[in-house]
Image (cartoon, rainbow, N blue to C red; front, side):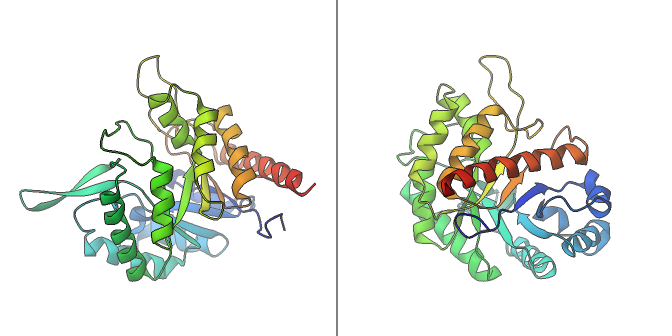
Length: 290
């Protein structure tokens, strides 16, 4: 047990190419995280594999299509699929993003296919709180909400994203999923790229008890002048590892996840990244005890 009396849990984002690995490899991680929508189908091989995985690992359901910041209501069909999956898998965490995805065109519901940013205003905060309350009541589960990488900024925003998420937690029972790489991406795109300062400024706004999970990922750095895209296609960068240490110092032993979605490496590479995350966290937490 650690300084805040919580076990340190470290996991990996599980993607289809590694289904066989997770079922046949020795257990070296504590949990896996999957994208909820990939398991909405009735029956099928994917859900069967996830059910087998659940026999040996905790599972976190990470949703990408709820669109909590949308003006349009979340389709009830979507929520019914998610509730059924929740009842089947019994996840230990359920998460979504602070973004919008749904809208109407000519009276028809349309999904953006992406995590679109919102202006950080009290009007949008109230709408997102309403959506979160609705989802949590329907599912009977607490959500954790992830900060996003954004490729535009809105003049209408008068709250920072960290202030927005802090107020959201205060008005609902939701917690925060802190993605360190998303802060780094936004720093490079909009804040002159002083990543360590951006991360330090961000996390000091968040109450110590507000963060329920941390995501770590890497992305390719483009040529000067081009937008950085959060493609989850690389190892975690040194800047993100350093920012991660700051987060562990502040928030303690919260569940930690390695995300890698594109240019997937071998399973052993992901396990090594997870072990590095564990080693860093243990070092930081041990230092806090001394």
